[in-house]
Image (tube, rainbow, N blue to C red):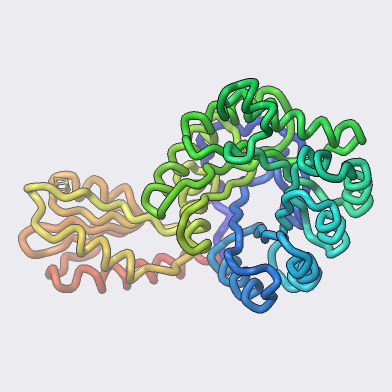
Length: 367
Ligand code: SF4
């Protein structure tokens, strides 16, 4: 396990009420959690549980599954029971699936009461069932499915429109004295999304689920999410995150965890500090950094490893890290905790760093 070295968070967290998604506390000062969503047909129980197991292994803390059909609703009880992490059922507007998900023991339901009201007004009954089972609800406002009334009022999905929609949705539950809610206001444009969450954070005390919707393929989606989450979390806004990528869901989790680690909201694990290389480099830094990263993959004790191309900034950075190398003249000076422990030929740099890392990791691991 990861030793409990306190991280230094980027900013004090916004004060929000706390809800519990299964055993995971969300809001009220609880650590920011990482979520993802399965891509399998939920009715395919085996495939869905397999994907949830992969997500769990990658560090996912809460998983959401879509529930568009009766077969999916029928699968929820088994999935909720066998999943190692809490399962949220994502329901568009059929009240019967909401009741099914609550009865099935899902840890939460994502549903917008506005949709329920429009088709078959059972908001009151849903609030009662959710309260009886202690099941929280996520209200998820999306730019792409904004209420027509608000689209007409604002012309498009502005931050104000998203916030008004979210608060109206919440009020439909508040009328029935139900406040076990978290909210998201997603947009594909980080500028709109950031402003929407900022306004929403001021106007309510519900915990907030951050997401940039339709963020795109892995590279673009990673950057959009990192920028948007960074802007919000650095103001203390955000209690749980989902990175949306057109990529396998375990990738979303990796990115989400890395964002939280970068912001000091979670203890950093392995961190490679490598220089960008320049005309002074005396070694192939890219190759070296990649080989060291691959060699240390899976190490879960916090470790900062510096890989530097030359002796200009090399020794300084390598000294600040737990472990480092500064290259020059076909050799690598290996630093451990600021001391040069040995100088090895270039061909031995990677294996020496890995050896030293293992030794440090053993020392850092709790007995
Ligand atoms: Fe260039 Fe050396 Fe700095 Fe790397 S450590 S960027 S090679 S000056």
